[in-house]
Amino acid sequence: MLIGGGALYGIVAPTTHLSYDRNMKMLATMTSSSVNSLLAQQAPEPVFVVTHIATPRVVKAAYMTSCVASGKKLRAPMVALLDSTELNAAVIDIKDYTGMISFDTPARADDTGGGDSRFVVNTKGCHIPDIREFIAELHQKNIYVIGRVTVMQDTIYPKAHTDAAVKRKSDGTIWKDKKGLTFIDPGATEYWDYMIDLGKASYAVGFDEINYDYIRFPSDGDMGDIKFARTGTTTKATMMKKFYQHLQDGMREAGIPISADLFGMTTTNQDDLNIGQVIEDALLYFDFVAPMVYPSHYPPGFNGWKNPNLFPYEIVKFSMERAVARANALEQKESGWIARKVSTATSPVASSSPEFIPKGVYANKLRPWIQDFDYGKVYTEADVRAQKKAVYDAGLTSWMTWDPSNKYTLSAYDKEDGLPR
Image (cartoon, rainbow, N blue to C red):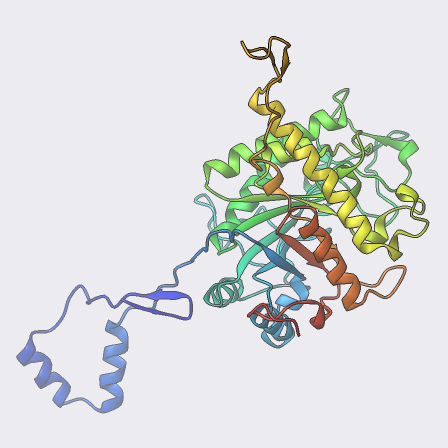
């Protein structure tokens, strides 16, 4: 066996072959080109074997669009960034807001074509034709590969499954948000299995973890003319929790790690933000939870900060400390631990038993998104580093950095050896 380029090549003897004497006589009468042709016919094609790497204890990831990943020259700067800095993971689009898939998926057993016909491949747009080879290249560099799936925002699925879409209350037609995009009604349970199957198909081409984004009800558009026929009277938070649990059941059975992207304010709000997102629910059912604590996305006056953009360290630290506290409270609740009043012979006055000491069962799942893009202000090296420090000061170790243009602030990330640039 030979291993090279992330692929496994097996040298297999042909099932039938000529005897030694006859073979030598035959080769002696053939031209060199004919010999090579005969040998090529007998040699089997190399077999590509998909590999995976385990989730790093500390994940430092950068987002990469499927457009950038689509070509070797386009993605070269991102690969260099990942290969030369502390970054050890990449988040690459699998399915975007359109509902289309960025690569050819493996075929189902009941398919006659070259891929799963349920998934529409974006062949005319941001398509990654060599996804397996690209992931293998990243794996060779010990880079963990996370696949991002935009879930409820989808313009393709509702065309074939109109019953699954969010509807207009006024006339029953398909509702669209302010950008003209359609949404899946989270109560459409058949779509849950579609998401599980997409996750499994993505894992089959090499993705190590599936990251689910837009796992929520819509929030922008004509909210006065919106109807969730499939959700019905079930509360938004309850429906999303059911979806999280179903997703976990299907993916855990397949042994695939999953993560969830949440609004940043899920760490501080006690309600579901009217989109169904409650951080405790996500912590129960996902392997990792990523609150999007981008300072630019907090409203003016949040926690007394007139312009949150000017306080990147404070915003991230405040938000993630609250997330850690809630995760630890969830651990205490799920453990069944109860403070008891006890008294001893030397101290007849009852006192509380030792306080609960969390082990990080849920807190260690927290892996926030931080900001490395300009919105409201120019984000500098100092701003990015401030957010990283805030994550560490909140007691966490992992983070993921986002820039939709993939033009990251190189100096904000330490060299691979840990020394600042």
